[in-house]
Length: 239
Image (cartoon, rainbow, N blue to C red):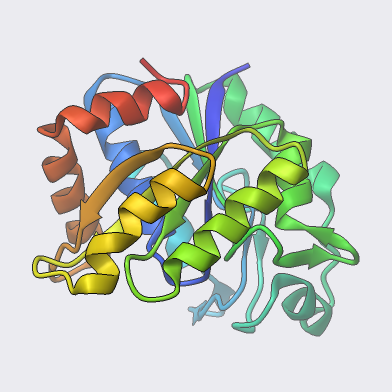
């Protein structure tokens, strides 16, 4: 079985996909057969009559793999909570199908990056949450947080909840850190590191590029020369 990490966020829009793609790029550059997975995507646009997960497309591009049913098992149209989007589309999200897809990916890859939908408490199917999927896949957790006001509360709540549920939280990455931070941004990383109960593994800059893939590539290039990246890889289970 391949090693892997489950990437979650403190909220939607914190840059989980960009960070996950950057990690995939870095691992691929190291010669690792890296696999990626976006188990459930809501808000998928219709392209030529078919739903497309733009997040899964970006992950696959970073990892250099084909976009398959294993990479993106569930595609949902409405940009709402997956359980609501699935009901609207007449789809039943089955964890057994996701687990089987993960096992197939693990057979042919050395390390798997699984990106969740939103945060840990996002409902996927019935009473099952993203946190339940993390537990089923038995993967350690990497939390992506935003740098702005409110992030300390959101991040500590996420880490506390994960640990209460018995999840293995390896650390927090603050993403999109501004070049000229205000008081809220500059104080947040230290507070998260000291109060969340898990280590702060990175403070990643905001990267501007013409495309999301360009942003991920720029972030990967920045991370490649940072001493802290070695620590990040070690903590998520790859050395």
